[in-house]
Image 1 (cartoon, protein in one colour):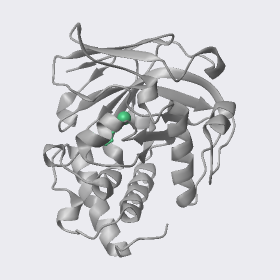
Image 2 (cartoon, rainbow, N blue to C red; image 1 turned 120 degrees about the horizontal axis):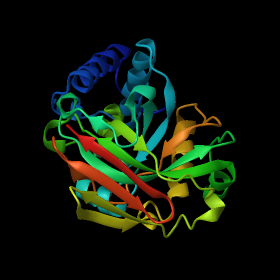
Image 3 (cartoon, rainbow, N blue to C red; image 1 turned 180 degrees about the horizontal axis):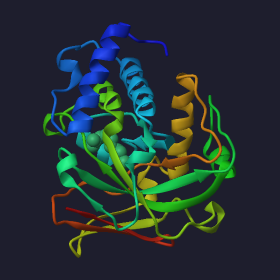
Image 4 (cartoon, rainbow, N blue to C red; image 1 turned 90 degrees about the vertical axis):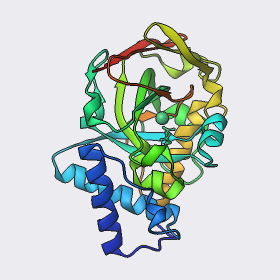
Length: 265
Ligand code: 0L1
Ligand code: MG
């Protein structure tokens, strides 16, 4: 990818730092404190190294996530473009499972629409229409994000190096063909311990969640990669991210797609 400034040794050193924080659940300062000139391309170089090390530990790539896709989220985080991250099998949790909070730093949850593809997609210039044509089905999901950076304070290169803060993914509910639901106006409500804590509509995600998948495919292109058929992709938070602690129970209820739940212990 063009625009990198870090040497191979620096990429490996930063990857080890982020990987340690992810695997042992501790906070680290954002990477740009040491490397203020670090670029988005450097962030993706660290993310790729993280992915390769996860595969070397025996994990399998199951798909991708798009993050920072809503205006509200961009304003909340002071970041103005979407980012992507990878999803491995060890991040996927069964519906209504209990997630051990001691393995996370300061988790938050988001309601998202997940896409499962039946055709390969390739950039550049991938469009929402191409994504919809390549989509097998959509289903409701919860993303557990867990920035490894102190107090959730970061910038775009740092958050990309931390794999877009991704930590766990829970999907469930009711899978639907994309043509059978209005993916633009889909409503979602998040409940924590029985109380509504956030709500929104899928248009919050770049105007239409399929736009987020197109964006992902175009970012993958800049890294010389494509999205194979059979990929599972999280399209980005519809609702704001909600802080969770041990004892919390979360239900995400989606219009037309049913609900997904998860507990924290
Ligand atoms: O999935 C997301 O939109 C989160 C991206 C990273 C920002 C954060 O950790 O809140
Ligand atoms: Mg998300």
